[in-house]
Length: 220
Image (cartoon, rainbow, N blue to C red):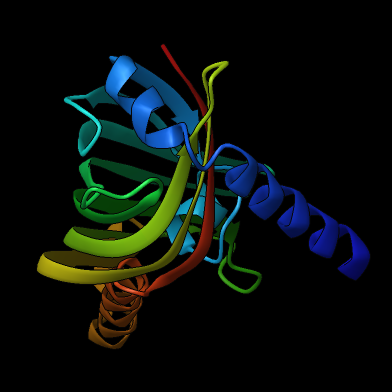
């Protein structure tokens, strides 16, 4: 595994150096780009690798959209649960008269939702009962980063965002919990408070920094 990682990095830098004289010129000749972010030490990338569409204004500026999402469901009869995550935003890159080095700035909306229900029959009273819980966490995140992106003669783009700092500028979180037995619905403030903590934690995850984020794409 370590040898493979070293080989990938060597090929990346070797390819970048080999095309160092043309990346800047190639960007000037391109209009659009498509890309995917398959790996990175980054929560949005690990959960739902985003895809992107870019517009090349010139050799120094490009801007595009990033969209990622994931969902999961579980149903075993007595219990059901579902969770979704979405990450959508805009991203701009500025190449300050450089071949591949760039500064980036993005604005994202990152949303988490989860619901769960459990149904059961009380062993003593034989009454049917159920409990339901749900949370939402929404964060608007400003992302500032630095990286390198190479654009090759044949159209391929390869880049790394070495460091991305994420700062939530607006957040909201909700939670709910209730239980029903014998036709009566009751709430539990303690359970609701714990769910609210979980929602807040998810928003904090949206603000964690990212490292070594790889992008692979095609420009034309």
